[in-house]
Image (cartoon, rainbow, N blue to C red; front, side):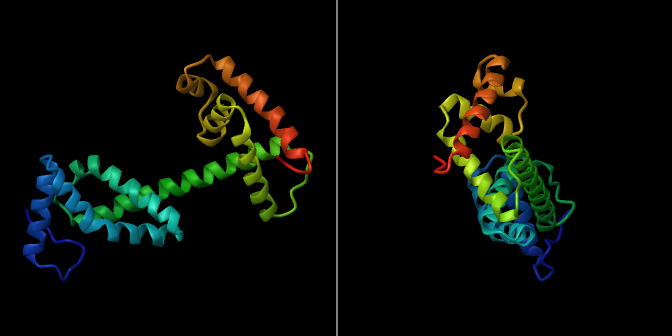
Length: 194
């Protein structure tokens, strides 16, 4: 069955060309996959930009879509327009990206409040500055301690999962997190910071 792409001005020849290209991609043709990405990257990026409103996020989303496209293209059976399907894929990735960004921001804010629970936060810009200072402080920690903090608070892993990634005992992760809290309180409370 030949389908029309989202652009209704496209000819049946264009639609057949898209179907042929996708069939080649599904057959494992890497050059065809490159062509598919090249032909649709601007479209994907434009949708990502509109959804996120941010250039860096749009680039991240577009890259994620291109990565997911490698395995997701097997799900497209030609029963709808490729561009419509790409639009849905891009929106799903954008939603996931924005949810992750919001979740990471909440985690960082919660961690910051835990470290400085007796310091009132006066404004959103203060919170952003404090979060930046916090993550800058994390970068000054010993490597294994910083890795534990990034996995637990940055990536949202629990202590057992972080222990598996770092190939150590769960108690070691707990110790690194405890050590990081002590060190970061000292670092963040000094007038000169670092």
